[in-house]
Image (cartoon, rainbow, N blue to C red; front, side):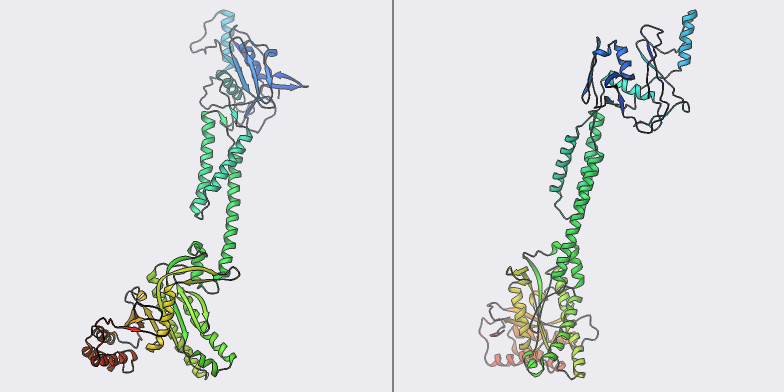
Length: 554
C-alpha cells in the first residue's frame, strides 16, 4: 500500500494533499494508523506524519521516534507526544460525532481556477479554506475500496486519516492498559470472587460471576469512553467464565461423589422418598451430630426366646427375614428411617433426616404402626396355612428432642439417635406386655395427632428409671378406617369411666367401665381398672395419689 502527498498551492495558507487509495482491499478492521514506515532499516514519515509536518512546518529530522513508546513532534507552534506501538502505529480514537466537511474536489478546484484566471468572485457558500488541512480522496462507492472501522463496515478509507489527524491535533489519544496490569486485575477478581461464593446456593454461584463480568465490562467501557484507555475485556471475561465453568464442574463432581457417599451410608435404611429429599438438600443431615425433635418407634416380637427354642435355626431366620421385610416396607412407605435391628426388635425414627413438620412425623409414625399391625395379621394367616408359628408384637412410640448423628469410635461409627425420648419409647414398647395391647404412645406423640386416630388413655405411668409420671395412650385404630372393629361411642364410655377413676369417684367409675365392658367383654385394661376401683373402695389411696402406676421392670 503506497501513500504519497502531491501539494497544490492555490494559496500560501492552504496545503492540499491528494490521497491515492490502495489497489487491493483489506477486510480487517482498521484500528491503527502507521506514523512511520521502515524501509531498509530506516524510518520514514508516513502520509499522516507528513501532513502534520507540513502543517506545522517541522523538518522530519527533528522528529523523535521511540518505537513501543512514543513519537515526539516539536514545532514552532506546538509540541505533541503521540503514543505508538513497536511497529510505529498509533491507535485511532474514532469519534462518531466528528464533523468532517466534504466538498466536491472538482467544483472547488474549478472555482479556484476561475478566480485565478479571470478574478471571478467565489460563489456564495464556497468553503472557508483558510488555515485548513484538505485531504483529497474518492468517497463514491464503486470507485474505491471500502474500509471496515469500529464505526461502520463500509467507510471511505480517507476518513480514517481524518480521524487520526484529528486525534493528534486535539491530543485525543487512545492508549492500551499494559497486559500485565490486566492479568493482575483478572487474578485479583478471580480470587475475590472465589472467596465470596463459597456457598451452595445456585443463585449466588451463577449470579456473582455474572455480576462480576458485567461490572468488569462496564468499567472497561468507562475507561474507554472517559479516560481514552483500552481495557481488554474479551479474553479476561472469557477466561473468568471458563474458570467458573471449571469450578462449577468440579463442584458438580464433588456433589455427585457426596451423593454417592450419602447413598452408601443411608440407602440401606432410609425410604427412597426420604433419600431423594436428602440428596436434594444434603444440609438436612449433619453427620457430626445435631439436636432435633423426632418421633422414635420400637417394636419387639413377643416370646421370641420361646419361639427360637421350638424352631430350627434355618426356619426361624427365614420367617424372621420375611417379617422384617414387610415391617421395613411399612417404615419406608411412611417415610421413616430404619435405624437398627436389635435381635428381633426394630428401631425406626421420623424427623431425623428430613422433616416437614413434627406433626406430620408423628402421624406418619402412627400410620406406619397401624400398617404393621395389618401386615402382621396377613403374615400370621399365611404362616398358619404353612403350619408355622404366629408372631405377636408390641410397639411403643415417643416424641422429643434427641441428638442425631454419626456416633461411635473412629474405627466404626453408626448413624443413630440418643436421648431420653429414645429410652422412653423403648420403655413404652415394654409396657404393651403389661396392658396386653400392641401399640402404646406417650403424651408428646398424642398431642401431635390432631384427632386423626382413635385413642384411649391408659394411665399415668412411672417407668423404671423415672421419677415423674408419663401419661400414656393406646392407639386403637385410624378414624378414617371404615372397617374398624372399634366404635368411638364405646371409647367415650371408657374415657368417662377412666376420668371418674382418676377423680377418685370409684363407684361411678365402676358403673361406666362395666358399661364399656358390655361392648368389649374381654378388654383387659377396663377390667383392670374395675378391679382397682373396687380395691380402692375398701382401701382408699393416699391423699397425694394422682393415679400414677409405678413399673418395677422394663
